[in-house]
Amino acid sequence: MVYKYFDHQADVGIIGEGSSNAVAFQEAAKAMFNVMYDADKARALQTITIKARAEKIDELFVEWLNKLLAQADLKRLVFSQFKVQIEQKTGYLALTGIAKGEFYNEKKHGSKTEVKAATYSQLKVGKKGDRWFAQTVVDV
Amino acid sequence: MKVGNYELKEVKKYTWELAQDSGMNVPGVIFGNKAIMDHLIADVKEGKEWNALRQVRNVATLPGLVKASFAMPDIHPGYGFPIGGVGAFDTETGVIIMGGIGYDVNCGVRTMTTPLTKKDILKKQKEIADELFKTIPAGLGSTGKLHLTEKEIDQVLKNGAEFAIKKGFGRKEDLEFIEENGKLKGADPKAVSHLAKKRQFKQIGTLGSGNHYLEIQIVDEIYDKKIAKIYGLKKGQAVVSLHCGSRALGHQVGMDYTKILAEATRKYKIKIPDKELVCAPFKSPEGQQYYSAVAAAINAAFANREALGHLVRQAFKKVFNVKEKDIKLMYDIAHNTAKIETHKVNGKMKKLIVHRKGATRAFGPGRQEVPKKYRAVGQPVLIGGTMGTSSYILHGTQTGMDLSFGSAAHGAGRILSRREATRRFRGESVVNALSRKGIMIRGHGWKGIAEEAPGAYKDVDVVINVLHETGLAKKVARVKPLVVIKG
Image 1: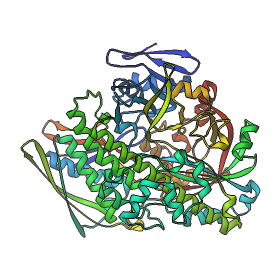
Image 2: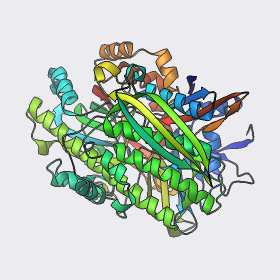
Image 3: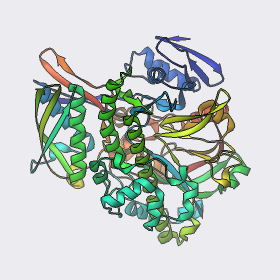
């Protein structure tokens, strides 16, 4: 399990990696929230559920990240732990995810850069060898 | 000149044509000098998968694009469109594109003039910096003083800046000096999701973060005395400029419609060379619905900047005892928009859907859309530099109308990635260096300041010079910051 960043001229590229596409999605979420704050410091005190669906796996990945962003903004939460399940349904993919975190506290979590959205830019979800990766650029 | 698969030719000074290949419907046109072009070419030669030249080319493959895929001199890679990209599409045969508008819908700049001088500001520089920092909600997830209900948000989306004024957050006389008079027609609150509205309940009157800022600037050079006088500018005068957009509502509109347009692209079998160019025929139900949502988000941003303008007036009243009416809105312009405009194409006036992504409208003399006070000389074009350099005020021209549908650059344009900027600069050092130049900064985090360090951007003077020399917009005045509030 690991997350990484890659350079982009105006914004930030994020990559999540793992043993499955679901784990890669989880790791990428960590990468995204750590662009905004010191998210790793957030304790798992609040839990929310995310449901998303899309025809393509890469579009599902963007849906997952954007739904997380909206909930974090709306509820003023910083998320640090994630659990994702992806199922193939007839004609689409369905994601059920859980995010855990705590209410935002500038003193504890700091203030880095607001992420406006996860985008379709440099969007890729795939496998390298036996490991999955999910990457995109987040608009900041 | 052959650059990778691209054929580039300087057809006129600072005007480069990207030759049409078999996939393009029209050529590309980039306005840039050698330094700007070298940077673009280097990205292609280094094999960067994602480069702005390719994006100029990709936009030219979309249906209904008129004349050319244009890029302003602040060009750098964006999402589908390059930043600095302008694309005008036929409203009958063309498309509306997510990447031509982006997530920060109607991120824009407003400049307000004050009766104060540099000397006045310097006397109370710390007091006004602290007061503005306290008064202007900025930073991650900041919330404003206006807490609205969903019904009221619908009013914001329909009426834009007018709503803020009705709530006591602005002045009626400002409306004439906002692009579209602060209220774009065609907005439909029903096209905006409940979630987008909910995220905006407390975000009207907030600055946000990233490259958003508020600055007290001093007019330090006048290039065109006659037009400066018409705009109300004098050498040594203090002005206030702020840069921000539609906040969470605009971001959510972008997120919601990315998905809808991805599906529309498949439904209408539109061939796109880059996934970020998801789009819908403008006349289709999806295209019309997206336009209505974008217009609504544009109005939310106008309301936001109007409310922020009110907070600026209050801070100046408290610190300098300046009457609110004496802080006048010079102009408020929009970036990141798609709007229906009429332009001359092949000698005939034509209705177009003009996308400006990281580009600004720069209408020339005589256009009805320009406030009466400025109509004889063209609209003010406000171009932000970096927090350590200069910003510029230019005016729109007939040349710009003819060349680029009345469009100009929106800023300096980044040359370093945010990560590279934080590797090279430390927030503390940036603040100290600017402090030695007499510029006082207030911000919410060192990292954000390092990302926005002056060295992370192109030389704004070069960008301005290209606009001036090509005639896309002409220089009126230069302003330099004394106080910077970063989001």
